[in-house]
Image (spheres, one colour):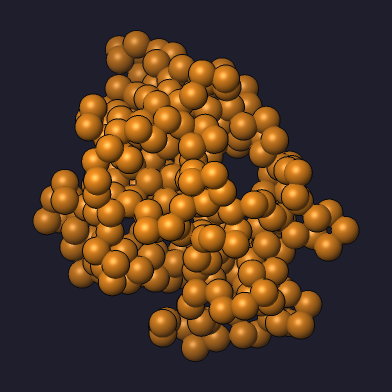
Amino acid sequence: MKTDDAHLELRLARDDRDLAAAQRLRYAVFVEELGGDGPLVDHAARLERDEYDTVFDHLILIDRRRDAKSLDDVVGVYRVLPSTRVGPADRFYSEGEYDLGPLRASGRRLLELGRSCVHPDHRGGSAMFHLWNGLADYVLERDIEVLFGVASFHGTDASPLAQPLSWLHHHHLAPPVLRVAARPEHRQEMNLLSPDALDRKAAMLATPALIKAYLRLGGFVGDGAWTDHAFNTTDVCLVMDTARMSDRHRAYYTRKQGMAT
């Protein structure tokens, strides 16, 4: 996949080296920057890993100016898993947090998204634009019908997140046919404020750019958030039905218009 930046290359990971470079970036973002951890995280080698890595495809953005031998050349990552193959115990990663019954029962072609991150040096530039373009190609080539995956707010205290979580609940809740639900063990209610107490500007300022990008594409959120203590995050499950996209959203997604992040 070509990009408009001569020094950047976008492609799927091809081998163990590519995967390790993706895991190195994930470690820098999810562990060092955000304070996450996990049973398979390799702190000595600085690799953020889990048991799903071997079944997912890894869309990687490579900066050729950086050192490939030291695994520091990958500056953007998106982990994707089509429903033609699922992970350990016949489960999607998200099923550790959400009941995906409505999606599984739909019989439609699904794609789970996760572990999206960009190196700090490439934030605010074209990196996310290239990753989204690559994701669009992946989806279109495989006739994917529904995209889903967890996205995170930093921190596990819901009090500072009352505005964005309540805004999502009141304005972007998925229709029943797509409404996955947070599992009870670490469920966090999102309906924390009444509609008349909402401040749209404050809610949007507190919402991560990735979540806002999904919303601009017509995406929805599932019922309830999930408190992920291992990753120090509060997660929401985003769901996007490509058939429900308006013409404007479809053009936006297929790059007839620019992709903002």
